[in-house]
Length: 93
Image (spheres, rainbow, N blue to C red):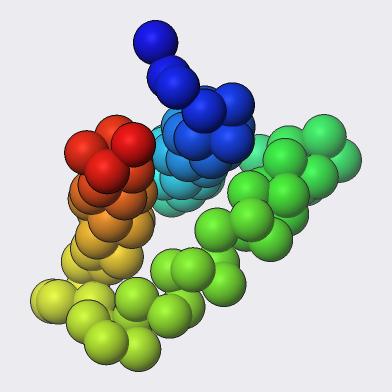
């Protein structure tokens, strides 16, 4: 398994954040296609939580790579970076 509990904890945090990024992307698609109504209090709270968790990181990526033709690839870059970070941690553990 993992030799160090701190490595395990860091990898779990990376996994949780990965799922938060995926949830933010899916939620944005559902809002864009009109499946989710943001006038609903619960839906708005979920959207605000996901935005608060992901937008600071997405904003940093967008400063380097702006949306291309209206397509925002910052979540994809963040997911690739998170996977790279987890493999890097496992490689040096």
